[in-house]
Image (cartoon, rainbow, N blue to C red; front, side, top):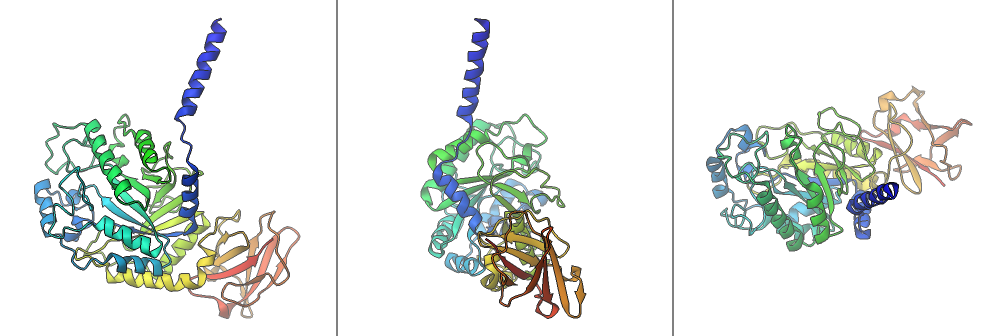
Length: 444
C-alpha cells in the first residue's frame, strides 16, 4: 500500500509539473518563424530623457531627484516626429521589425494609460500617442511591431527598490510588489488590446534584483497572463540569464550568442529564436556628446555574423527630443539599405550552418544555397591575382551542378571538391567587395 501511495504521489507530482509547462500555441510558433525571417530589427530608445541629451539612464547617472527629473516632461514636445517617415526609413534599410520603448526605467509611459498620469498624453505639451502612431506606421509598411517594457521603476513608491535608482528620493515605505505587479498587468493589457499589431514584448530590468536572488518577479505568472491575452505574442527578457519558462525568444545584449565581450551575455544558448541588440553609436538613448557611430561596414558585418549564428540583430537608435532621428543614424540606415537591396537573400530567411567561423568570414544557408561571406579578404591566400577560398562542407551538403558556384552579384566561379569534403573556390581578387563578398553555392 505504501508503495502504491508513493507511486500515485509521484504521478500527481509529474502531472502538476506537466500542467505548469508552457506549450506555445500554433500561432505563437508561426510568430517565431516570422520573427526569424527578417534578420534586421530596429530598436528605439526614446522618452523624456532625450530632452537632457545624456542617455536613457540620466535619472540615475545624473543623481537627480524624481521631482526635478520629471520637469523634463513639461518640455517634451517632439513636434518633428513623423511616424510614417521613420517607418519608411526602417523599411528602406531592409529591417523587418521595430521595437520601441513604451516605458523605460524612469517610469514614464510613451502611451496613454489609465494606470498613471505620468505619460506622454497626460503629462506633456505634445499630447500625442507615440506608441499608437508608430504602430499604425509600421503596419502600413509591413513591419512587425514590438514594445520594450521596463520591469523596474525608479519613480513609483510601490516598486521594491533594487540596486539602481536609489538616489531619486523615494521614501521606500510603500514597497509592495503585489500592487506593482497589478500595475504592470494593467499597462500590458492596455498595450496588447489598444495596439492589435503588437507582435512581441521585450522586457528589461530583472538584473535590478540580482543581489537579492530570493526576490520573486513572478515572471511565469506574468508570461501566462500575456499569452492568455494574446497567444501569438512573443516574449523575450533581457535578464542575462538562462531562459525562463514562458519565453519565446532569447536575447543577448551587445554581444552575439556565444560571445561575452561586454559582460552581459554569459548565458548558454537555448533552442528558442535568437536576437542580439547593439547600438549604432555608444548609447541607447539620445546622447548629444556621443559621436562614435559605427560605420556602415561594421554594422552590415555585424548583421551578417548574427545571421551566421542563427540570430537577429536589433540595431538601436536614440531619437532626438524634437522627434527626428539623428542624421548619422539616417545615413547608416541608408547605407545598410543600399547593401541589403543586393545582398539580403544571403541574410534574410537564412540559418546557421555546421561550418565554424573561418579566418576569412562566416557562412549562412537557406533551402537552396550555401553562402560564403568573405568579411576579411586579407585572410585569403592570393597568387597571380586569384584568391583561394577553402571551406569544409557539412557531410549532408551536395552541390547541385557543375556551374553551381558563383558570386551573389553575378559571375560563375571555378571550384574543386576534395574527397574529404573540402570546397575550394577560385575568386579573382579584383572582384572582392569592401563590405562582404558573397559566394553562392547552390545545393540539393
